Amino acid sequence: MKQILFITLLVSTACSVSEKKEMKKPIRLITLDPGHFHAALVQKSMYPMVDSTVYVYAANGPDVEGHLNKIKAYNSRSETPTHWNEQVYLGPDYLEKMISDKAGNVVVISGNNQKKTEYIKKAVATGFHVLADKPMAIEKANFEILRSAFVEAEKNKVLLYDIMTERYEITNAMQRALSMLPELFGTLEKGTPDDPAVTKESVHHFYKYVSGQVLVRPAWFLDVSQQGEGLTDITTHLVDLVQWECFPEQALDYTHDIQVLSARRWPTEITRSQFTAITLQNAFPDYLKKDVVRDSVIRVFSNGEIQYRIRGVNARVSVKWAYQAPEGTGDTHYSIMRGTQARLVIRQGAEQQYKPTLYIEAVNPQDASYQTKVITQFKKIEENYPGVTLKKTNTGWEVIIPDRYKEGHEAHFAMVTSAFLNFLENGNMPAWEVPNMIAKYYTTTAALEIAKTVSGK
Image (cartoon, rainbow, N blue to C red; front, side):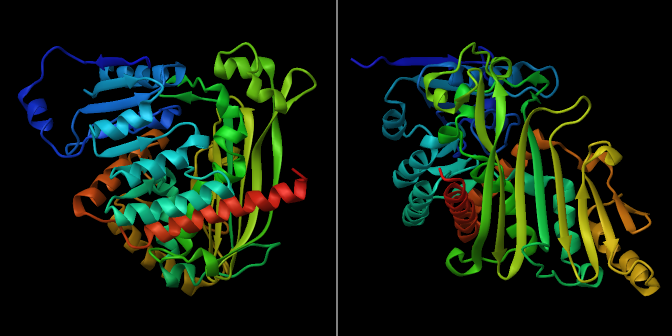
């Protein structure tokens, strides 16, 4: 007989009147096999239209335990505590049980990426809406499954959406907004493979803090067959930003609009002591032994670069992973969009105190008439972002953004979730979202195929 275990995580012994009303609301979340901290971040905030009871289905183990501990921490924090009521099913048949129970109608999936695409396909095929963490596909075979999942979602009239938090980072949003002002930006250049019109670079770290605590990562996070390589993981965000900024609200057809020109991959080496620090495990599990070199070091192919052409525009995206950021720093981002009038550049180095900072760099800084245009056009930005100002530099302007717009990465999960909930309320989402998700995952998985061919494995 299969082992079955039900657990109830309650915040209090009684419900308020408002909570009882909330229980009648139609949106009920299910968390499926949580293994990544992003699953918990979806619940760092409460949502007026969402039932406070969340149904969790998973196998018993440290992944789900870590997830529930994070929810408990949100529920018990002193400032703006949440009041989630987690109804947890633990058993080897957790996926089948979720499908048969139909306890909720929106499945949140954030965990082992090796299983994620199949989870998505089965969830939408059985009538659940899905909000999935990136990446939804980590290799070519997953991409084909994902394409069919979108067909199933449309047939069953359910929504399938991935969590693109970087659209809500203020400098990214403002870079996009400025690029849509032709008198300021001009038109997007085409660039060349050696000198792309758009470049996005991202640096991440295995050892980091989340919600004020050192993040304990599951050991499988360092196995690219389960987490995905750098080319199909973090680059998902970068490719999404290229599409979202360069072709706003336009549907892309991956069969015609995307040409992957080249791609490469390389490993980050993690020592056994570093592995222990981030996973709390003393030895490499068997599935990581294939990656061991020099007895006590594993090679993780978490780094990659893609050069591609999107509707004739040359773009380059790259991701790098280090073990730990230097003191006082953290994950960093660099981005440039080259227009005929200006370059829109996001830098996050020492000069910016490792905080993302947006610059407008004039193609012709001495053109007085252009300077007047910038001041005039920027008033349109100020209308949407009151308090944002410009500071003159030698090459153009620095965009000064008040702290109230800098919510931080963790807060962006609530923004994505709220947007998805609005899509559900409206019964649809923008027509360009689905084809562009397909185009995005085609780009990353096609790049991985190329990179593996080049590297010989």
